Structure formats: C-alpha cells, structure tokens
Image: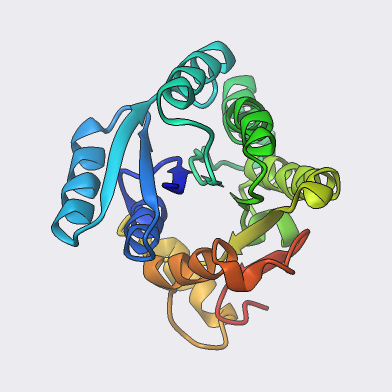
Length: 241
C-alpha cells in the first residue's frame, strides 16, 4: 500500500527540504502550496528526478472550508494519508505596541487555526486506515522561549505545541504518533542580516542550521524507528541559549 505524506508549505525552505527527504525515504509526497505554484512544481521536479513520486495540492491554510474541500477531494481519490507534516506558516514581526490587529490576527489565524484546518479533515481517514501513522507539527523556539518582536508568532507557536501534545494523547491508542519540531535559526535564504547578527552569538554552534537538518529529524519521526516517540517537542537550534 502506498504511504502518502502531506507536507504543507512544501514549495520552498524547510518544507521543500522535508518533502525531498521524505521522498528519498520512499514516501509518496502530497506537495502543498498556497500561492507559489512554481516553487511546488520545482519541488515535484526534484523529487521525480530522484526517482520519487508526488502530486500537488493547493489551498490557503487559513481558509477552513477550502482546506476541507481540497483535502477531502484528494483523499477520496487516493485514500487517507499515512502522515502529515504541518509546516506552512507566516510571520509579521513588529514590536507589540506597534502591532496592528491585522498583524496579530493574520499570524494567529494562519499558524494556529491552520493546525485545525489542515489536521481535522485528515485525522479520521488516518484512523480508518487502521495502519497507524505519523503527524509532525512545526513550531519554533519562539513558541518555547518567546522572541522579541514576535508576540503574535510566539503565541501561535506555543498554541501549536499545546495542541500537539493534546492530540498525541488522543491518537496514541490508534498507533498514530504526534510530535512537534521547533526549529531555531535556520538558513532559508530569507533571514534578515540584522537577525543573524543579533541571534548568532546566542547559538553555541555559532552557525545557522540548514533546512536539511530539520528535514533529517522529521525523516526520523516519520520512520518506523520512531514508533515509540510521541508527544515530544524537539528543537533543532544549535544549542540556542
């Protein structure tokens, strides 16, 4: 039986690295994108070149109805997913006194509501497949420690951590593991130079992480070897203090 894994936000950065690594691991990747279709197609092309397989799916993770319709249609054709990597998210960094309602709502609705919007349509089909499964959510060290200028993002990611732990308890008896990965400073090509200058001195390894290093952890959590690992929050942060 083909084991499909949905990776949201797979058109670039960490999501793209995860999709490619899981394809190398033998999973069939459902490559999600919001607006960057060209990036998603490039991810699929890389996977195909490696001998892997995948397909594209598009929806706005902040749009509950759109998520449900697109995911239900895909699963009606291909069956329930073996795994989901809930990676897609947004930031809108600014000091809290200057933060607008739109900046707060946009980040919280997209990141935290996205947990429900993506996973809720997927969980029951996973259960009905009766083969166990894997769910990996992406938080951030910002959700663990708080981060200056990211009150909205920290709140959303902390919420994801709590929701992940609760869902892990609910799904354990179904042999579906649910874990959270909390990346630190990762070089996705979009990190501001000022952020690097401020944050790197707090990283004992004195470098940024690579998307592939986050993907390596997700690869393990998605594997059969991780069948006894659930309800965990694991940071990939170079020892960030």
